[in-house]
Image (cartoon, rainbow, N blue to C red):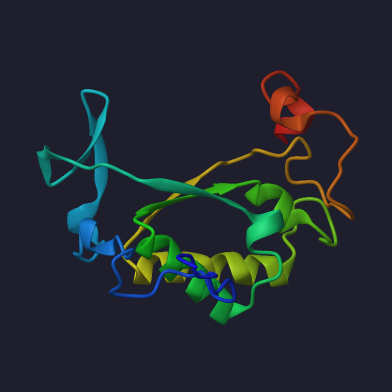
Length: 166
């Protein structure tokens, strides 16, 4: 009698609601004045090294998070992350995402490249930061026809194999 069922049809955090944590983030535009550097092992503003910058980050797994989103969905995804209090995205398995269904090794899938570039646009628009993993997939920048790669671990071999570096 005391409990009510929760409406589970839309669990997104509403802008301006009590759960919207975006007010905790720096509201200023990320431009040259917000360029980062490292001082004593900490991120600081290059223009003001005494000003420490802290991140609350979330990882994007492109295979599950971005693969089915159109541009409107990407905008909503980034805005929701900001309302959840995040100010940094970590792009995880970006290499595999860009190479999935690519025509050739080292040639990004144009549709997925467009989605990634639009994600960057939305991140900048929301005044958030982006952290890139240069290579997180074992396949590196080889074309992929499926998500599972059974070849050599290129992200390890890059350290000693000249052909992988090339």
